[in-house]
Image (cartoon, rainbow over all chains, first blue to last red; front, side):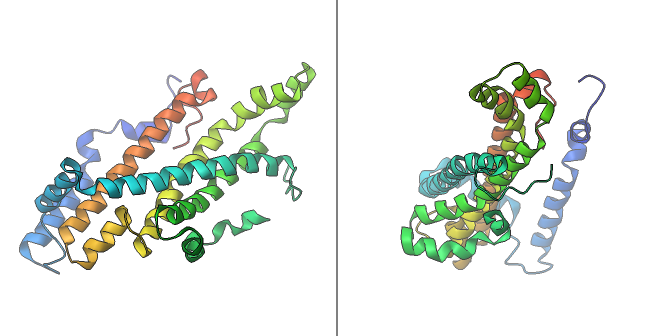
Length: 104
Length: 164
């Protein structure tokens, strides 16, 4: 609808620079802690190291079986839950299965 | 009555699924399915309850059969909430499946995170977390676009019926 826009759409109009500011700040703080060895020097690897490792997962089939396994689980779970949940929900609400909690 | 079980953490049933389904992918699928079932069922019920009685009455007055009533009144009316339920269910399924993977598994992203943690490959662990984050966000965004296209209300008004 023209003229009207809800909260989320209004947020989308904020410039990308402003939206990514908190992310950039987070990365900057991460790098500073990592480089200076301020606390737990082993637990803050450089962001480039992380991105390099990420790139190996994307570009090589190393992680493929694990991605497949996880996607199969999540997809299967969602399909199974929908196939069971939607009809059961309709029947429950219609009162076919007894215990109809009416708040009408 | 069963719906009161919605607050039970689904991971506690995981040992049962390991016994029946083994330590492969299917026991995690079951945990994810149970986790996703409750939001989907609950929002479907909520959608059914939110149907305006006027819609049903009007259709009945115009002589709609039970099948016509179901297809033309009930289904379009609950679609928005069912889609919202499936998207909340996606979050629950990801949580359930990956959490189960971190316990006992042979493969999977959650399994690899714990592997890297155990081997102290911290950079690899963080990158895998980042990878899951991106994967989940992209899946969620794709679902939103798909549902926005499918939803009957949004065909009339593009802003309606997609809740988040």
